[in-house]
Length: 247
Image 1 (cartoon, rainbow, N blue to C red):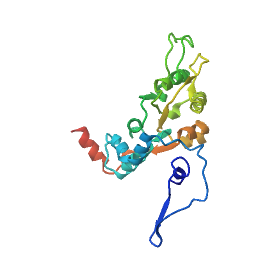
Image 2: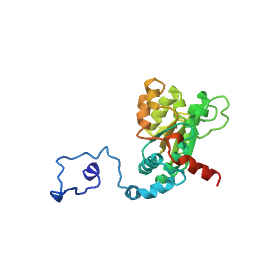
Image 3: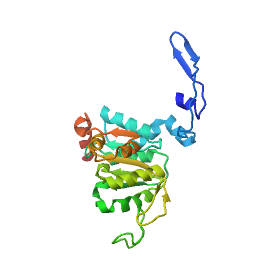
Image 4: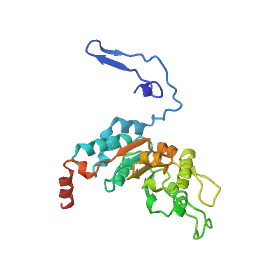
């Protein structure tokens, strides 16, 4: 709130204590607003001010455990903020369900486009991500859109992020930095507006330490991180899930 009050949404700050009561507080410095995201959008301000509306989009995630409730609260807080999200968790913990709910609770009007990075042959990763023009390689008989262009204006869900080869990681980083992609076989860049939600069942910090994943790309994607607990750590959820499955 100090950052907001000293940059784009000018506001008075108050402090309170049992001894002094409530009184205005003076912050003896200014903050440059040049690098602060623009949050003056009315819809975004409304979403931040009413987090219960964002949380409603997570009702499909069956739970009663405090562990999952905390993660859902974090995800609902993240959803209206247009930042990349990295979701870590074992297989079967519901990473794609969370990604879909985050997209639904966001202000993005485009579609949710999932892409399983682990299911793509390494020599076709760039074409799947960025598209390809006709004749770019053997079998490219037509020009096709990549995942970025298909998700333009919406959310691109990169599942099994840790499976991306290093060469593709380099080009993915450039696409995120420049806000544009170049289809395979083309020299013409295409501007894109995509929110990235990535998911993995690996520890990405371990992958970075082992040299299997680029550190700069990791920090670009892990602006917000959600760690989903496995079912064995979700007290009370097993019975609830069984009831729902047999209902």
